Figure (cartoon, rainbow, N blue to C red):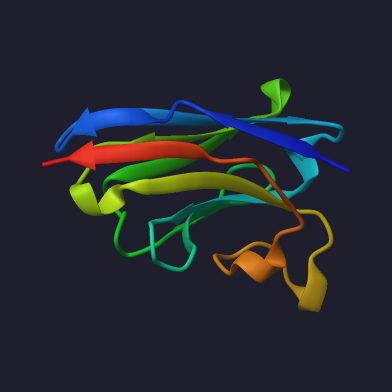
Length: 128
């Protein structure tokens, strides 16, 4: 079992930056794919970015490419999401998640059903 705790959310103006952190406990994240998701009010949860166990491979949603950067520090058991050039449409609750079991024969990706444990979320609000 893994416990995930996000932090770093807040309120910023459009064009600003935030850095989210996700600290894991109960298991090492070194061996697993992890991801960031977000959910805006009245909308479905969507995948934002995914990272491989060693951090060498990443996937981004088209809406955040070139603005967001996902990274991991396995020594600190922590994943990050650096968000730059924020837009009002980036507003939402941001969740981190971890894929422990690679169901379906593949690991990671941006589909939420792939992920087994989730944090409680951190709110990001971007004003225009």
